Every structure is written in C-alpha cells, then in structure tokens.
Image 1 (cartoon, rainbow, N blue to C red):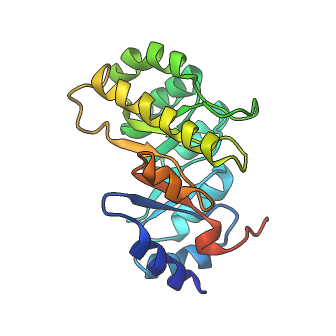
Image 2: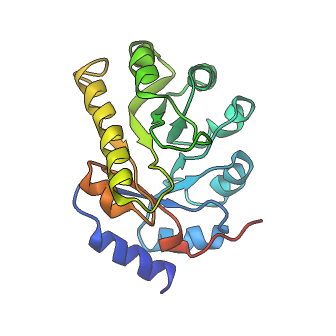
Amino acid sequence: MSVTQNITELSRRLPGGVRLVAVSKFHPVEAVAEAYAAGQRVFGESRAQELSVKAPALPEDIEWHFIGHLQTNKVRAVVPHVSVIQSIDSERLLRAVDSEALRIGRRVDVLLQVHVAAEETKFGFTPEELYAIAPEAAALQGVRVTGVMGMASNTDDTARIAADFRAIRACFDRLAAGAFAGQSAFATVSMGMSHDWQLAVECGSNMVRIGSDIFGERQYF
C-alpha cells in the first residue's frame, strides 16, 4: 500500500486518544510530504543533521519529535526545530536541553526515557533514577516534562514485552501522582512501534511511534 493508504489505515485502527508519531527517520522529504498530505502532522526523527535538513524543507505546522539518543553536543542543532524531545535519558542531557531552550527563549516539551528492557544497550533512567530526579525535572523552566517514553525488550516473548510496557506505565502513574501531580501537561506515555503497538496500547500507551508500517523499510542515506 502507499504511504497515504497506510496512514489512513492506521488512523482507522488506532483507538481514540492515542496519538500517532510517524517515524520518518531515514526516509526522504518526499515521503514525509506524502504523509503530510494524508493528514499526518507529527513526525519522529533520530538524527540531528537529518532533522535540520528536513524541518526547513517541510511545512511549518509539522510537530517534530526527536526520538533517538541525543548527544549533548547536538542539543543546539535540535532544540530550534523540535516540539518534543522524547529521549531524555540522563540528567546531563536534561540540563543541556533546559539551558539551550532558555538561551534561545523557548520552552521545549520533553519525555523522560525509562529503561526497563533486558538489553544493556538501551538508554534511559531506571525507575528508581527517574523517581529521584523527578522533583528537580518538574521545576525546570526551559523544559516542560510532559510524560515518559520507553521500549520493551527485544524478544518474541509476549509476556515479557507486556510486563515491560506495564512497568513503563507504572512509572508514569507514580510520577503523575507524585512530582508531577496537578500538572495537566504531564499526560503522555509513548511506547509501542510497528511490531508491538497494539500490545503497548493495551498496556496503557497513548502515543505510538510507527515507521515501517507507514513508510516501508528504511532507506539509509
């Protein structure tokens, strides 16, 4: 099916209240433009250089989400273009984004990345680290923490994947009742990709990050 047909089908299948981030990383501007023409407005990128090329070339009302590991030396290149940085995975990065946002006079929405998966290679805060940093994160002025993001273990074990998603959701619930209590903007649980988004939604996700089911296999360039 075409990008347009894929967007239409996904929009039909997604439950109400679940937002779709179309993961456009490694796909050309033309593919993003086709998805935009089909009504999609939220796109996810994971490389600073790619984002800085695409954002000026596409409509201004696109909501860009940075979803990959962000190095602190790339923060200055990313902050002017993004609506949300989903992958805040360390206190150092959080403070770097806060400082840069203040420097250029804007406030950036961010998600705190939770690490519950079995792989050591995945980035993010452990739940305990998250609870410890939350009060300071809630008080920052250059960033606004609007929720959490996470990934499940890379496994075929559906029970393990569901347990990971539930653990991420539990972190969100604890933070929503604690450091971010009363903050209506703290409302996003971003989890679930092309292969597991339905299970993620069942486990409490309200934002899914889908790439290959929209754009096909990545075109590396």
